[in-house]
Picture: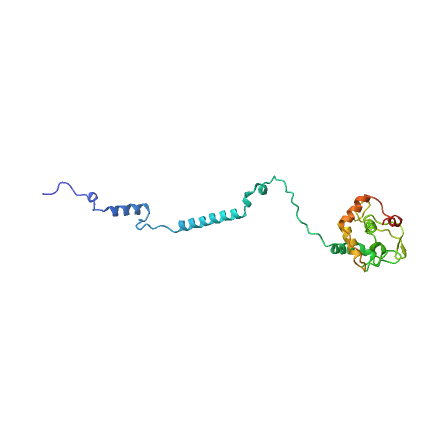
Length: 221
């Protein structure tokens, strides 16, 4: 006697374990089973790298941030009263530079000048004499005849070097002091140095005036 119900192979199910079912599901989802708690190393490496960078940045800021002082980082803040130290130029170096740039044309590299035209600086009683007189000569200029070492000069007036009306050079007090210091220590001269303060004092005393004459200068001691 035959079975009245025909067999359908689609209805037959083979026995399956839980593990096989999970493996089949993971395969369908495109994931491999994590059977050994294995993790990828790349995320861990990146974690350590970024942690190290954060630690370094914190250390750097702590050392070089000047403690985030408001006076340092305030873009609208006013400058402090501190004065930066400025190294002063050697008067002899500065004086020689200015002498060779201008004075050498008339007084010559030897300081002997030109006979009958430009008076000598070497051994000059004016150069080696009173600072009060020689400063006025360079600062305000000299006009008219002048006697130097027994010879009379006056064909060409001494130019005005200071910052006064009619000056063609506008030298500041420091430059005038430097060139006088150089001249008074060169060409065999051995007179004391002249300071910018001495020049400034005479400048303040005399103000803005015309060239000096020999007669006026001889009244100054």
